[in-house]
Length: 161
Image (cartoon, rainbow, N blue to C red; front, side, top):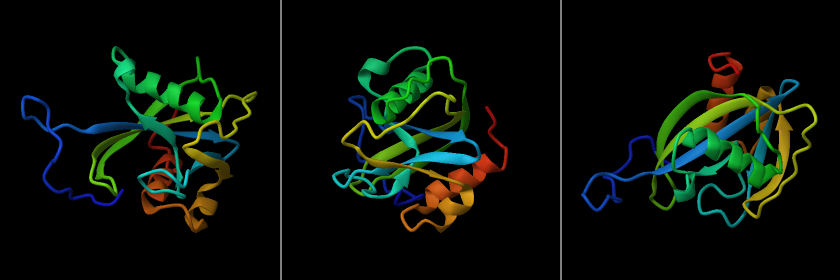
């Protein structure tokens, strides 16, 4: 995230209304630690930084429960973990503009990683996975402020599965 006060919307629909990228981010917890990805070096936005697992809503995701289905799809794509049947709880949302100017609506979910799940980086977009406590994330040099802020919000208990 580069700005909380974005410039005029550069993307519009054919009807002239503002258009946004919709990103879904999932923060999975196990035993007091959060699963974070290290974004790949080739990512246009925030390469090399830590983030929740996630990605954009795609045209094929249309329909009911689009945010939840996108969350599950992205977790499977990026970590190889199937979250079918696992509870996901809405945590918060935000608006930002990417490094290259895309206006983004970011929707955050939290969940518990299933006990038998063994996540592994499963996508070119993911350079690696880390498990961090809130304190470790706060001190990590590649954990951006917006991820630390989200983890503080989650740790406060305001969004419980």
